[in-house]
Length: 301
Image 1 (cartoon, one colour):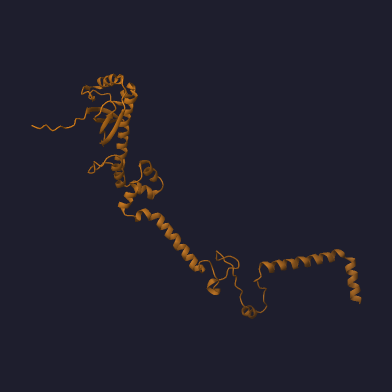
Image 2 (image 1 turned 180 degrees about the vertical axis):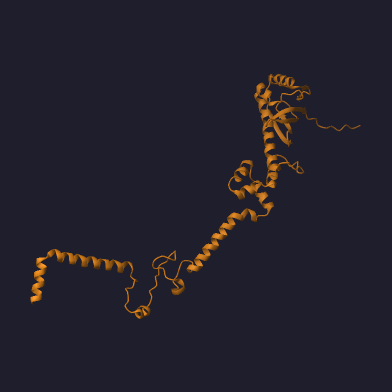
């Protein structure tokens, strides 16, 4: 009775102390409750080691993607299920897939037969093949293959010159031929535009240049050649050229182009030969010859 009276007296005399004790107990109980919810399998410390060993282990049934995560059991001990099998099998499969992808991505072109690679690249045009060589080292090696450029040359220009062995390879030979063909096309654009200044810059200023027009008249020397084109541009009728069967042959500093031209004022084609020389990195025309194609006639006695 006296103890209860004393306790009531202490509680009533020190309300702050009582509130503190109650708050501390509440915090302790809340912490314990949260810990039990988050870690239900966490064991409290056992005073006896035998009790701890005898108690059965609980297995986490969650699927984990790593081996060090909290609650991830040992697959060798518990046999817990994992995605695609156990941890060791998953690591082994991932490693094998990564190696296979890396090898297939790096050696796909190298595993092909060279003839197949050349045939596949032959479907590309000149700009596409150049872009392909800038993607990576493997594609650059495949795109710079000499056989690929030889096949592209035969597709874009001519099937002739199969026995030719270019000194700097077929890629350089293709680029040089392409430059000559474009230069030859510019010659006919100048004729359509009737530009004497452009024709003056197109020809090499030398005494040995020559020009044979379709009329059969020969002009020799730079001044005589330019004057002949000035007279030709003064014709009243216009000229509409159609150039076909272009064949080019390029050497180190000389090239010639043969072709057939069709004009709307005449029925038959003209056989045309243009010769160029390379000076200071630029191709200049040094010879032009145009003549009417005459059909061969068999004369019977």
